[in-house]
Image (cartoon, rainbow, N blue to C red; front, side, top):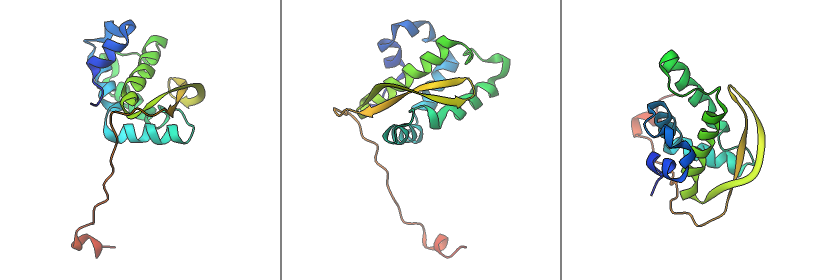
Length: 140
């Protein structure tokens, strides 16, 4: 089963004060999209921090909320919570932190954890290639 925000809170009691935080939940949902999970796994398989390909999306979301945001990315606690979210999200796919942090020059994030495939996955991402419609083939 894919990770849930509730599972994130359950596994990370230090983050329980975020249980009703709508911006924290929205960030979790962004990271938990299939495309973002794929990007995180691809980055991990290349030895890059799992968060690297998705930081811009998180920054854009928080910036779009302006002063109404309830999640401050300049807070070390909130940035650490994002890392814990990533850990919860990637675990069902068989990925765990490798105890390696790498520099990440992206907005508020200065470093992030790298992940490695350890097996025991409960889920797999499946990418389907589909044939384009005939009328799309003739367009140039």
